[in-house]
Amino acid sequence: MLTDAVYQSLSFPSLPPDQEEKDWHYHMRRRPYAAVTKNKLEVLKEHGITHIVCIRHPIEANLIKPNFPQNFRYLTLDIIDKPTEPILEFFPMVKEFIEECLHHKGKVLIHGNGGISRSASFVIAYIMETYGLSYQKSFLYVQQKRYCINPNEGFVRQLQEYEPIYLARYQQQGQTSSSGIYKRKYEIDDENSDLVKRDYFNTNVSNS
Image 1: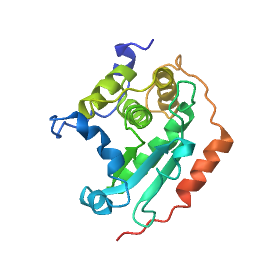
Image 2: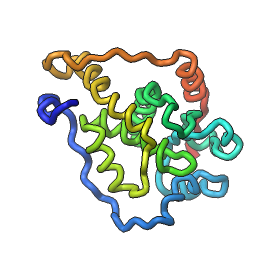
Image 3: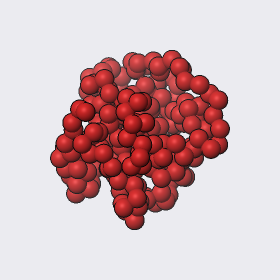
């Protein structure tokens, strides 16, 4: 298990200040999915959304899909919400997509069907790696924004496994002189990765 001393020995940016209201109600849990339905284009524009990560079960493809490909850049992932589903291999790809969005001063919406397990897991992974936090601290931070999140137990294990992975990558990039005792190798499924990347890079974006 990684200690606080390990994280403190590395240099990461601070979490942004909390500028959002915390008056959250249970009925609000459906807002992320509802915001991407076909009659919500203006809502997305009003909130400045430019990029959307769409996470769905394959059988949900006709329901949860890129509805506005001419207005937003999409990254679509077919992921089942079950403990045995591998998601760790997609964390770097989603992080790259988010960073590309932020680099161009955009805003990204990450959504699934319920906004409780799958999408929450990817937001937690991004917070972990970007700000150098443990799974538990990242979970609590995201939960403050959306109280109903509850990643399934398999996703939690993969998020915990991701801690030494992203730290090793951070060390390898020369950001720190700390020893590499936490280095772990991981493999990305080339076939799945290529499919998702093609979906990402073949998406046209127009500013309307």
